Image (cartoon, rainbow over all chains, first blue to last red; front, side, top):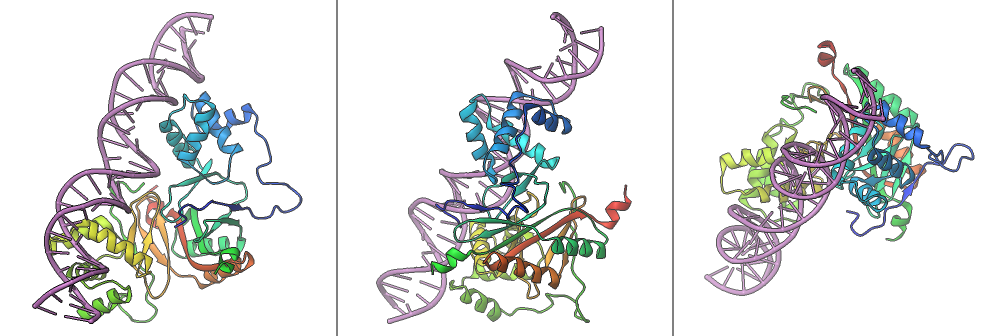
Length: 166
Length: 166
DNA sequence: CTAGAAATGATAATCATTTTCAATTAGAAA
DNA sequence: TTTCTAATTGAAAATGATTATCATTTCTAG
């Protein structure tokens, strides 16, 4: 699945005329704030990792992030990247995506929650939001007495262009 | 997550007075039929694996299944179990569940599709069905021009009894 | 019955991730 | 600022699940 394919990402269209969900830039202080809020010490490694994550592509693997960070400062070990990503996932600063049996991908948890639809042919990822689905999930949880903390909704199918290729 | 916890499974209530979704018993011929439909040769190993899967617990790991099968016939290697499970997943005879970062669990693909809700405290799994959610998923796919093949919906939260423990 | 492809199991390999541990560092307290 | 100590780090080894290899065995079409 997805072998030798280039990943593309389709973001849901911004509501108005924003250029992107992540056009806001983070100062070093912003970065430090975020790390402190996780009850972690501020280190140059963590700043660099978080910064790189913020600047980079939306869905990145730990390995990819490690390689990017390496190029800037080769003193960062991959254990640190993995550790910090795991920590950030726990504090919900990043969200883990595990699609199919691929390595886990990470994204900064977006303010506007969204789910993912993946093309099983070319690996393209579409992000979407649907409040109705969210509401129904809450309803289901209530029926079984669960208090929901989070969820994973991944749709899989064939995108338009891959459909046409056949 | 879930360390040293016993997994429990809550099935959705059967519609009428069926005792279970999987009360039907499979003859050896049924098993052979299923394997042939996958364009695979019928071997005693595959029969045993499929049979054990059918008789056993609903959400099983490859390792667990291997161990069960081993007890009956120690000539079955785990490579065969993994291989066959993977093949069955591809032909949609079984469905892979990857919840959190646990090892993949398998279940015979149920006729009535359902999703899962997992208690992050005790690991209990509740199966549920919700047609409205399914319909909305199709609608989303249509909006983006996707032709859906399958999906993964996992809800995570705290179950009633774990809520009370606190 | 036989040939040839498919399937098998033991083992080694892979891959992502986690742990270990000695050395370093952040940051609270003095 | 200096000191202290727990948190953090990187390198390397360990882990755990899964997959590939390959010589041997087994199906099954003919």
